[in-house]
Image 1 (cartoon, rainbow, N blue to C red):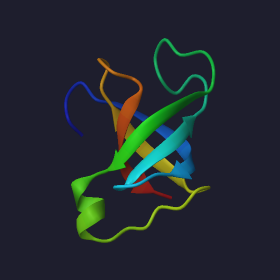
Image 2: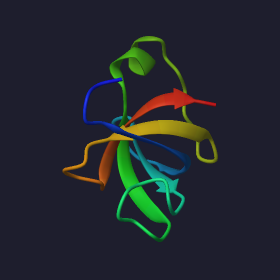
Image 3: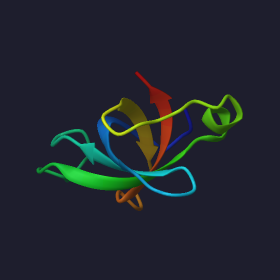
Length: 78
C-alpha cells in the first residue's frame, strides 16, 4: 500500500466507458464523510493487465487520496 492512501470498500453501481466505474461507499469508510457517497473510480494497472472484469453489483476494495475523496482506484474485487 502506498503512503497517504485511504482504503475503503464499496459496491459498483454503474459501469462507465474506459474502465471507469461509479462506486457506492458506505458511511464511515472515508474520513469526514458521514453519509453514503458515490466515488468515480478507475481500474488499477494490475487489474487491467490480468483482464479482471468488474460488473455492477460487485463488491470491491478501493484506494483514494486525502486530497480528493471523489475519485479513486479499484484495487481488488471480492
